[in-house]
Length: 336
Ligand SMILES: Nc1ncnc2c1ncn2[C@@H]1O[C@H](COP(=O)(O)OP(=O)(O)OP(=O)(O)O)[C@@H](O)[C@H]1O
Ligand SMILES: [Mg+2]
Image (tube, rainbow, N blue to C red):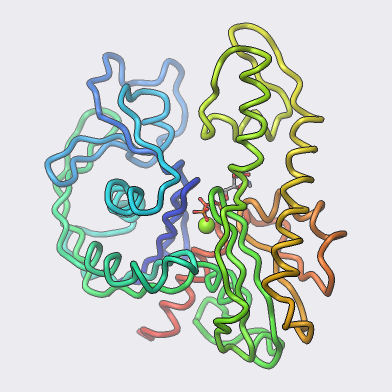
């Protein structure tokens, strides 16, 4: 029995076996034969991004972004679950699974979709999946991913479990067991607000909103469209936003001021949402800001959020906080 965790986000799909990680963009595309599969220059071998799942040949992640003609990417939740979540999840888990080996998987859903889709996600994943893994050199390997058990938890709880539990699934920090902690998980599409009151989930203090980083990217993309006439897909803005510059048809656009303004406006919007959803929870002990977007917006939020803000480990990719917590939770509920 092996414990794995997967966080299928609108921006990135993340998975871990507790030791290693997979992170790729949540994009699914038609697989097409690539004439020269080898990279032009040798680089280190990456994990496979080409699969046959349910009779469909697909590319996922950056391979789909770069090579697929038909590319699927959506910010609609029902469509995301129905069309892409399973492919993304299995693709992320595949490298950690031995053929036919029983797997137990922890995953999550945004707060507002949790009730409605918990069983759907469990049924979707808890099966014997016969997939084909296609290596970069074209070699095909049939593999059965035997997922014998699935546990679905509210997404921001991943980050809490990550702080609360150690690698053996044992309680680590006392304060999370005895205090009232708020979590703000800022992702690509959603921002989840949640409260753990002495480890109990508070329904009143929990909410999902659409204030993900894509709001800022939309503003940037629209302004770029006005300036350049090209509509840049949102998922092609990550690198540009991080670098502060984008080149479109040979012309360089400086994004620094634009990005800062968009982030600062989004942070204000999230701070207002926090004060609304937590209006009755002024007795909160501390607030955790997490998710990949949390890492980006933390400098803007720190001054706007009232209360003690707990820093997430700065040396760690904040996109992984939830998935690491899912895995620790798995170890906690399924002790070997
Ligand atoms: N190294 C990085 N590479 C790319 N994006 C990063 C990185 N570090 C932080 N980010 C930010 O992380 C965001 C994605 O965060 P995250 O992976 O938590 O979202 P998600 O879980 O996919 O989305 P959602 O929770 O809405 O489904 C990006 O929009 C980007 O702003
Ligand atoms: Mg997320």
